[in-house]
Image (cartoon, rainbow, N blue to C red; front, side, top):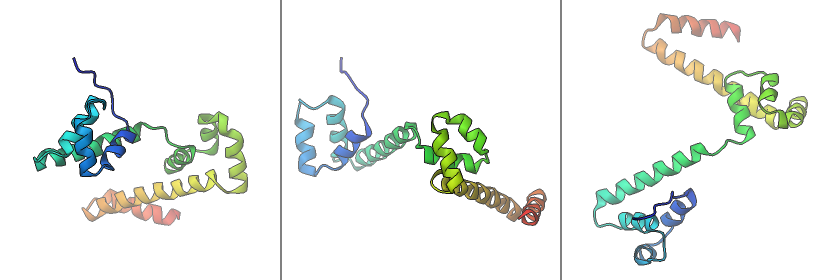
Length: 152
């Protein structure tokens, strides 16, 4: 039975950085993990469709692994801004970072700026959705656009 271990982003990047000659050598090197050799063999295949599908698969795997990585607190705070969480709600979600959050809010820097950027992004997304629906003739969307304009 073949032992197949998951392939990390680092391995994918390492493989994609190889030259053709290095790929040929790696594909034949039995000391390399089976999965790594197989990926290289598929990438260097004479079958263009197989090679392109392998690149597509690698790209998808990298995106899946990246999405599973925890977001930095800055990215999380920006997301909270997009959905209009209050600073108290944010602190409740990140009690270990409460002092940093409070200090940045008071000084209006760092995390606070990420939050305000998130608020702007959130408003933009709503406006863009409403505008798209309004172009399609949605009367409710047109009303909401007018209401949002009056509230600005």
